[in-house]
Length: 276
Image (tube, rainbow, N blue to C red; front, top):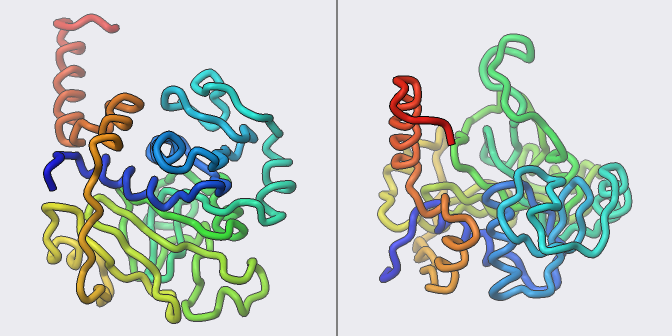
């Protein structure tokens, strides 16, 4: 790969390439918004980007701070309240793809974003459900992104339903649109897909520089691996340029950001640095 990119940039590019022209997309704040903006700018100009807060058909200008941050957009077609976003768009089957972050995920794409360890009173609280259960339930397809989550054999809490126990259990339950569910998971190590029959997660490709053993160690079950592993898609210069212009923090490796943040904190605490 001739163009150097951080793992986070590669994640964004892989997610953006899943968006097709004309699709209706629900985005969260952060990586998904950057991926949506990238897709709309370079290869899917007619995709319709939406937030669960009800901002419909927007081109992002700078990364939004929250799901209702219209100040960061270059306009939008119309707005709804949150209730109508769910009832008139999501529940009626108009969402082609939703993007959700992962706290815990099992082999069948079931998610926990509620708490880890202990129970609901003693466990460590995560971000919570938000709209994730509804979007994973009713969107035609869902793409999962994992930057700090973990693979587990059994969830500490079921927040959002993937393929339940695997196979056709999701479709047979009668609770979800036929054929819906998670289709892809991308982490800072690789791209994962779900087997068409068993619905079990398998590794499709590794990010550049990542060794297979590193991924296998993170998965508590016997991970299925594509044979052969696909080559991770190489970024183009246009993709890298867009990300670094739109959200330059993605081009800084996380370790560097952490080191810089810790250093800045101690300088401020010692009185050597004034707040901006």
